[in-house]
Length: 408
Image (cartoon, rainbow, N blue to C red; front, top):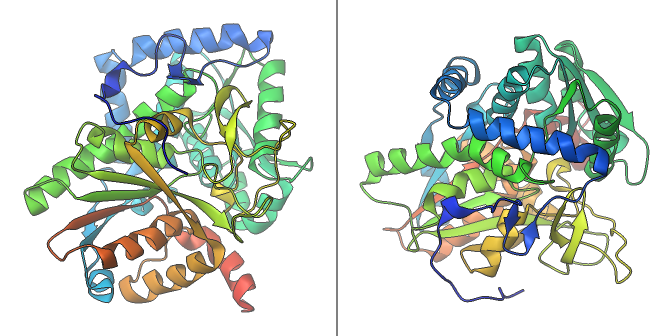
């Protein structure tokens, strides 16, 4: 689907506006009972983000607890396999708990503690955000409840056990598709009921303001590191950067520092599932339309009556009907392009990366690898491609083995 507006000058720091809008996207669409909580959260974050003590403490925990900075890794064998551009992987899979999610979980846990909140809730799809939230709650002594769809609990049983080991209560959700959308619904119901003493650590660049901005800011460290690392390694910026996009947290953090560098192409890769037919995918820009879901206005997979369509992806973390509002904004301005990868391609590339590089990627991240390897083959050998390896695939091994008919 072609973007609707010509490129214009981008001031990435001007967004969102005071109402949480990225152009026509974003905003605040919640019950009245949550308005005060969101306003208080926005005010607290506005102070914290300018407080040197808060930022210093966050940097300390990102280094000592999470393991930042992560490496920018030259994928020599994948590069030789493709025969084109040099392929670098940003190794967010090396972080504590196994994915980029720890960046945001740490930031929001520190903010919750600063606000005097003793109880934390979260939603999770693939389980990585739930694990990260459980870890930071254990570290800071916070009560933790994680909502997870029953289908996702089955395909990510390892992460459910990891959360419970760290003291989190994992509540299965049996409604609807029993995946991420329903988990968010239940987390929001909990927050409405327990808003005074509870902070909701939303895991992606979604929802009502200030969440899309706040989650983006906590993940900006990814792109900041990439910029410094690629300049050190290559002496110039990359030609193209690719990341998977569910809600879009890893991608916006990866892309943000490069939005004003027009020579760097930015590509987000959605879940093509079994193919682009209704109910078989989660590629919001392939048949989606503008609407409101779970707190914000953005592109959503919905029917003509506004009912949310069924989605599917082999990856639990990308199996969601809406995309983050900032991604929709930059797509309109032809600054971020979007593609999709289907389940069968993902399975093949999952095995390929494991065998050629000795790196087992998360199924979410493998979507970016699928498109990245296609692009590398089309690019010249003197060009540079950076792919965000947003998480590791240990959590997916049981699911992949089942799909491949292997008994563990």
